[in-house]
Image (cartoon, rainbow, N blue to C red; front, top):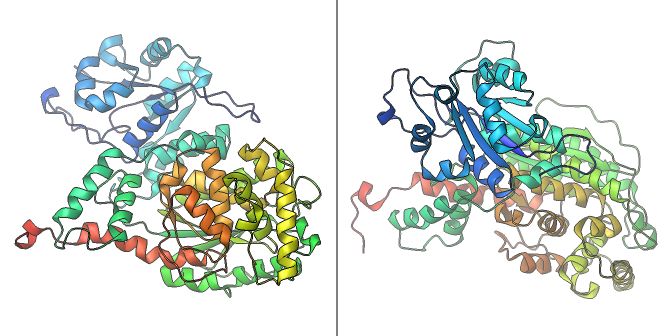
Length: 534
């Protein structure tokens, strides 16, 4: 049973799907049963796999003139059929939707209350049957497009459809509204697609090049295939950079020479297009969104420009408390910031983004980053605390002492929510939620430097397995970055001596990540090129 402890919404115990047009492409009328072949809708197999792994019971209810349960299961194939706890056809119950008989039988077999279930379908009859059975409903396909547009529904080519058309993203969006963005996202974090992962090396071996000659590009290509559940993988584009901004009470301890007001000033600079991330994202063709999750001072007015950066004001509180004197924030604050990040990721993906990049801004934020890394890796503060913006030796010694004392307060309770509330920052929490939701939505997440890596440690602790969908953009010179990379088993794409933040290293890595996918789909194989293999 999946539920948010902070939400009065009914828990999710089961999901019931229509089949034709929802789980699989609708077969032409009159197709013989023996000729039926399931062409699964985008995201359908992944959604079934992850829901099943999360303990959610699954069923299917379909209208047909001749098929019974065994026929439908045979058409869907053994892998998908095994995940469905019940399959009901209109032939089995003697009634077609909108009659709720089929839905009712499925609920009875599953043994769940209608309020604790969900039905997914693409036709008005599916929606009417769900309503008659008292079960919440999610529309997909033409029914969904008709409900969100004043224009007549049109057919969408799956090869060029936005992520909004993917079944896993649509259902995730509904669950986010029902359970909360982070709780819903944690539900759909799981291992990468094993079949696509297995196919990737075989494809790489057939391309016109010596085996292994493209090095890390081949590893990245395989990872992208596993994330997408397809080999070759689609090119991860368009890209979205989200910069989360927050301030830190620990600045009062003199851990940075920069004043707190700079955070708000840099937010204005991002929105005006004048920061490094604007330049690098523009060169890489990525959009930029800035999220005020915890800036302490008023934001400066900035004129919006068409096609320019977007500012989202989602301030949980005006900066954190001083982590050297007590908890940086409450658990409720941390949960709210996590949800801000998760919601931002889901909105980006629903808007068409197929790769997410992390960005951050917050004067003094390398101090909480070091505390998070120390707490979650077990390494001493002296090994993970760096100079940030370039502090001198006395300031570094003071910073190490602050981190050491703050982490010592945690004692044996190193649960991720307690850790991030006690010693983290609002942008760190938001980044963690953003990473979890991106992985849940089935897109790669390219993380930046030490701030993002400290957030990734939180994300992995909250949703084990999330790191499989993450690509480390670069190795920051901050010692905590290398410590986090080693702990997570990540090999960064770039090592350029960067320590700027903002998402700069992630943006620089983006074209290389995209090249890994392009190689797999664009290079000729030995057979196709007529080239003899060694």
